[in-house]
Amino acid sequence: MKSLTKISLGIAIATSVLTSFSAIASSEEVKQPGSYVGAGISLQSFATNPSVIGANLAGRYKFDGAPISARSSVLFGNGGTSVVPTISYDLPVGDRANVYLGAGASFKVGGNGSLTGDQTAFALQPGVEVSINKRVLLYSNAVIPFNGQSNGSAGTSLQAGVGVQF
Image (cartoon, rainbow, N blue to C red; front, side, top):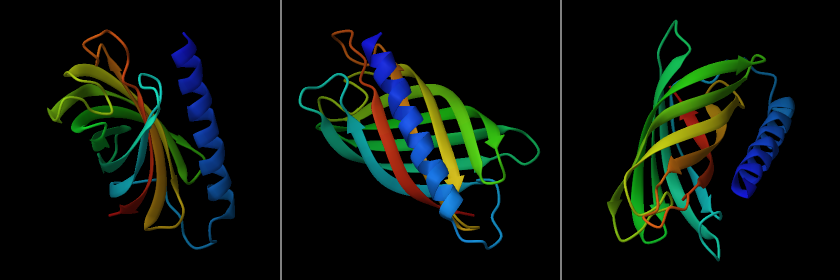
């Protein structure tokens, strides 16, 4: 339960920061977040002591006319790599922000561990995206694997980054 509170707090903080960036963005034409590729940082602090910092690559394909997207993240750190494909339900917030909840899996593909654990697991991915202008957006999300660690703990990872929309 303590981890769930930290996750909720992290998402609330990320949402506040991204919304603030949204408010100060340039006045050029801005759109709802669309398909993009991006890169950023990752942090696993709920199942490891000390916390582990890594990197991420993220991508989203937004299906036109439907609030559904195909997403994938590659998380590097903690001695390995995780690939996290998900399908998400997307909810617009205002004219330049989007919150979503994705479901999929976390696959450990290298090393003894990864930012999401040491084994393949079902994963949820809540997140938020904010368009800064018509080409650039900021994203933040959490990957929450269920039984991602062989010892039963959650290898939850938080991501943030910058994406280029297409």
